[in-house]
Image (cartoon, rainbow, N blue to C red; front, side, top):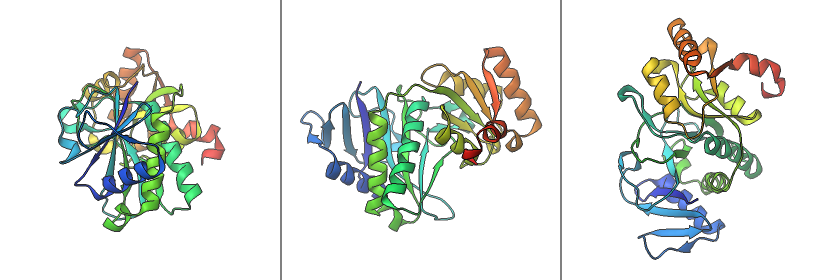
Length: 266
């Protein structure tokens, strides 16, 4: 199973991350694709342009991860993971919850071992690309331009991407609902339980039945759980999640209850 890592040459964080991948791992030049390297079953391709706008892959792959910068209003140092999707257009990429989970856990471990001040967070589904036909996950360095070029942060993301590329864990596949963009409650659960979350539909997205069904359909593997940030949802969102879950035979769980039962996650 070939995993493809894409890094835009126009993104300083991606350039940083790809340099760390080549520095710390045994990638060899791959002759059949320009600016590409291979290490076991993982290929790194550097390409020009905005990866969020691509509609096809530079080479065949079973799954994609994107090394990227993250832009935030606060500018605080962060390391983030998310699945792409244009929520207003009802266009979602295919999510791999297990890859999201593996990357998030590996980011946390690398951050702590390296001694970085960055916050590690799962983000809500946002931006493209959405039409690649294989699962895709973004792993990002957030903060200011200086953070994007921080080699230690690049190393943490490189380690997380390679860990996720070689992970074969079996988890409970979930779609996350409610809460803010940075999904702090879902992040805690992904890091501390056997639940893996791919798409996260936040409160501000005003999700409806159609978007919920798309999130289920656009998840690799069977979705067996709706993970609800109950206090971070309005009455309509709660009701429609319960309705769709019942129709599809999917279990529901409130994040608050899980966190209460697992106090070490608080």
